[in-house]
Image (cartoon, rainbow, N blue to C red; front, top):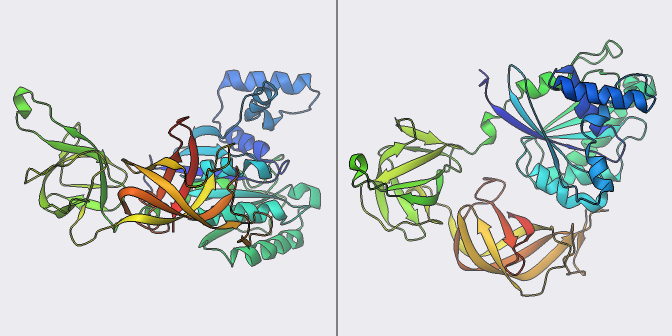
Length: 417
């Protein structure tokens, strides 16, 4: 059964002019997720520009004006709801020089939608987007083969592109890939089934997004609870209350569970799990709760409560796939603040093992300087241990960001190998 309020996040990626904005516009327009005043404004602009119908790309391309004003465009987020699900779309730019934006937009996504122009097939950008989706362990990929109206809705063209994409995805860690032939401009197979492609037996895009099973994407095995703050209300009804508040990163915690606090190693038993409304018997990801323990233990922000029989690794030397986000290159052996769950430590990039050549997706072992948009494998040393899991097993406890102390800018995002 689908949870009617379940939130699905998806990111769109594609080369320039593959029709990303038109696709999102069509999705919002046909699912009636646009306010009337927005629609009227866009109809007026479309008429002014001499378009016959509504220019759907305008729903997301309010950003173009910002670009002309010199504002940096990162990722455009769009929200919409259908009776079955809530959605957040991260619309990421298609150019090579915006690799970092795609990494940012895709880092929290359940689904990546990769657009391919039916006339051009799989191009270099497609390989790059598939690689980033696989690197970020996005569980589901929908390959939208767009502009089918320009190739006479040919089944043969569709099958050829599917074969091309399957050849590259077979080398990557992607388990669930689906292909949909569509015309975002005409609305074929976006929200409504296409009458022009009766050879395609699958569901249109919106139905696929609404029914996709995403509950199993969260790690339910490894219980991880990073402590964000300690609650000591000191009021009449909670005179001796000491609760550890945070968000369950993965797994399930129940009242009565034996737990260990890391990195100290102290053990105790969960006495209660509380929310603002009522106490609970169990909490699972991604719930925000307060946990009390049978014993008084010195716990503070950055510590992690885990099950005693299933612990993460406490490590100071970690290997990370890093995407460099900053305009300024990485400084050799410079100190950064590393943020991992609720834990902040000082850290240093000890070694760049290799860089990924984003054109060939091969390894470059010679060039060791990290420039903006570079993706590389690095070794990092932290001042105190972090409680880590590999990113492929746990996207929350397996990810880090680096912050430059001098400017307070986020300079890199990484996945623990």
